[in-house]
Amino acid sequence: MAAAIQAETLTKFYGEARGILELDLEVREGEIFGFLGPNGAGKTTTIRMLLDLIRPSSGRAEVLGLDTRREAVAIRRRIGYLPGDLRLYERLTGRELLEYFGHLRGLDGLGDGPALADRLDVQIDRPVQELSRGNRQKVGLLQAFMHRPDLLILDEPTSGLDPLIQQVFYDLVREATAEGRTVFLSSHNLAEVQHVADRVALVKEGKLVLVETVENLRARAVTRVEATFDTMPPADAFGDVPGVRELERRGSRVVLSLLGNADPLVKALSQFTVLALDSHEADLEDVFLSLYRGNGSDAG
Image 1: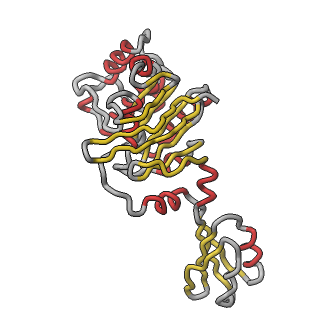
Image 2: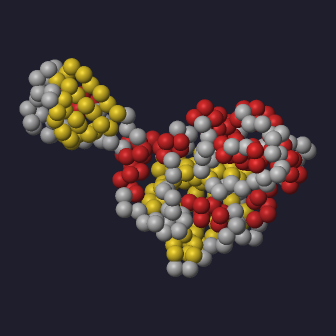
C-alpha cells in the first residue's frame, strides 16, 4: 500500500528547545491514523513541518508522494487542514469563508460545504465573530472537508464540540476513508481516537514511542475486575493465575487486574461462589498513562 505521509529522521529544534527528534513515520493511504501525545510532545510541530509552515532542522518528509519543501503548494491543493489554533476572519460569514476557500481550491461554488453545514448543525450566514467556540470549530471542519481532499490533517478536531456533533465528525472521518482518502488525526484525547483509528502513533518528549494498531494497543491495557463472593477465597487463590494480580480486598469483594486472556481467571473464579462480577473494559488510557508518566514540558 502506498504511503500518504512518509517522514525520515524528521527533526526540529527551536534554539535549545526540542520540537521533534528523528521521527520516522509512515501513514498508509486510506487509513485513519491517530497521532497521539500530551501537549508539548511535538505533534503540532510535526504537522507544521509536513505542511512546510516551518522547516525541519534535519530530515525530510513526503506527503502524497510530494516533497514537503519543494512541492508544498501542490501538497496544499490536495489536503484539508484544520489547525489546533484555529483562526478565522472575524468579520466574514461562514458562507463567505467557504467561498474564499473554495476559490483558492479552484471549486465552482462551495463544494460539500452546505451539506456538511446541515450535518454539523452550523449556521453559515452569521459572521464568525458572533459564533461560539464550538460553531467556529465546525466552520473549520467545513473548510477542511468541503473539497473532498485526498488527505485530511486534523489537529485536535473535536475541541469545543458537543458529544452529538463529535459523533457526526466520526462519521465524516469514516466516510472519507471508505472513499479511499486518508485521515491524519492528531490529538491528546485517547477516547476520541480509539473509536475511529486504524493505527496510532504515540509520541513522548519529541520522540516516537511506538506505532501500533488500536487492537494490539488495547491488548496491552489492563482490565480491572471486581468480584464479590459468598465466602472470601484464600489469600493465595489468584496468585498463580496468568496475567492476574490481586489489588485489594474489601469485605467480601476482591479487586483484580487482568492483562491478556480472561479464560484462566474465569476458571479460577469458578471454584468459588461469585455473587457479583464487575469488569471495567480495557481502555487505551491505561497504556497512555503508563507511557507518559514523567513526560517533560519542552516546546512542541
